[in-house]
Image (cartoon, rainbow, N blue to C red; front, side):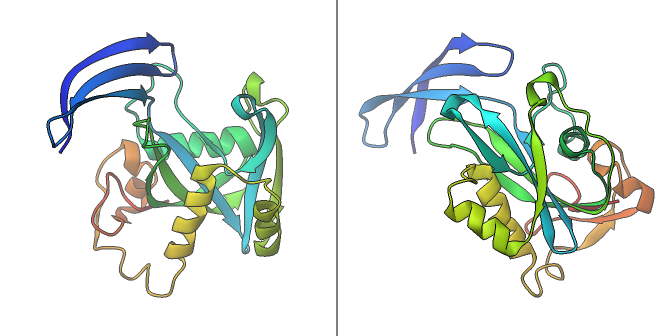
Length: 219
């Protein structure tokens, strides 16, 4: 087990911080880790009639435009609010879609070799169209529906390279396997607010296998 000996913050801005940790390896040798800390974010897979909804935008760090599922994090000051609320907000802002049904598929690490950030993945169904509410930085965003063949073509062509989007699609594939929904856990009363925004209205929600931080399915 790696043990942290000392930790110091070396950089901070409104979206992230960077720290250097002095560590001790199991064999006693010293080492150092540079770690990027960013709040978790939410990613939404909008699905309607066997088609998935994607957005395309310019990603400055890699200098190119790519297709991905709608995703994002809260602005500064909102950290700690429910991932389900964030997922609904990102879906509405980037695509204009509203979902009557949201299913929690799981949490993935984004780049755990150097970052602590995670991504909460939701499936959005029973969709109602509307006008996007995009931020100025998303003004050039485009969107489209794709079927299974078009999804594979975009991946093969290198037009979908976002690791969270690809991992989310893998979680969706697992979710759609026969028997997966039946094994997804016992139903229990939501009885609350925040993550149970929609579930509280229907009174019941189920958790993902092994339990989870909030109800799996909400309406």
